[in-house]
Image (cartoon, rainbow, N blue to C red; front, side, top):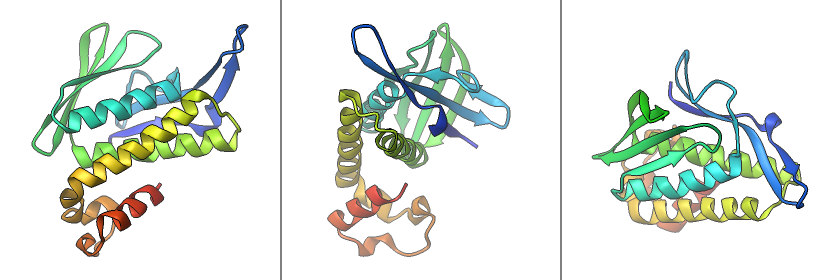
Length: 183
């Protein structure tokens, strides 16, 4: 039941006295029916987090151990790659609260869906900041890098798309279009 929860209605911008725009909203992980990290309805800097998490997910997918922080509070998760799994430890005040093992493809699909949702919501709400543009660029980079290097993995795992057809029929460029088009 692992999911990244992001609530579009809660996404809002705040302009400080120096005219800097910061985007906030609910963003947190649901690890199980009643287990949330850092907490249910956690409110944080959505764009900053998604930008960092996309970059770190790419690094982890290529073998790096990564630490992904939440901006508010002392919460973070550490992710390592092992075979086709991400081993993820969730920490509060440097004490591990949860640990899960999740298929890489499942985590990356969730991250892709939420980044796509955030981008659509930001553009619909006309919240266009340098960070919004960076998130859009990172999302596209994420999709391109991920598809280019690991097309074989996708082609053999049609359940990623919830389809039963053979994905090996698609070229890399066609596959990139499919990947970007699916929410």
